[in-house]
Length: 192
Image 1: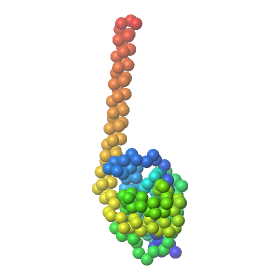
Image 2: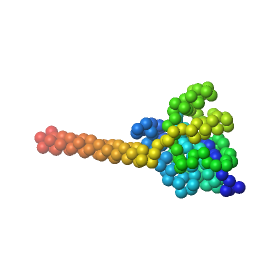
Image 3: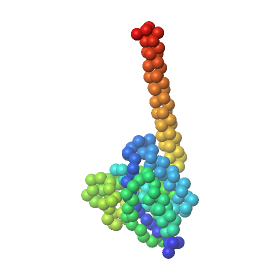
Image 4: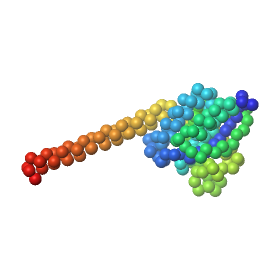
């Protein structure tokens, strides 16, 4: 039934190097969150995202047809790979009521979760169905995640760093060229 309300949890691996962090959040993750929130608003989806050890754990809630359509897009998204559905279950109501995509900064809770399950690092590919359900419950209880304003700040800082990095590179290159040209002109004028 395509209008059935479901919860789907999946894991994937980031294709980018982790922790180009601004305010403790990877700029790539902030970009993914901004996109997810915008798209999920359009498609009446809610959920949560956790990122750790180069892996994503995402929980989505909404109409089955909407989640299926989004998952088909996610499979083609070059920012992550190795998507694996961990659970799909029918639900009576959504558990992430006001979150188009909650980004849970719950490292302490996840460390306790991992310790409780005797895992040395965050690896959702090793989660049992019970562990998946437990982490979803932890995500639902988590305090407010990053706001849209915080994401915009991270994105603007990241973009300004990238822009200044390019500008600085051009500046340095122009100095090198000026030094080389000056040296060549000097050698030419002195007849050496």
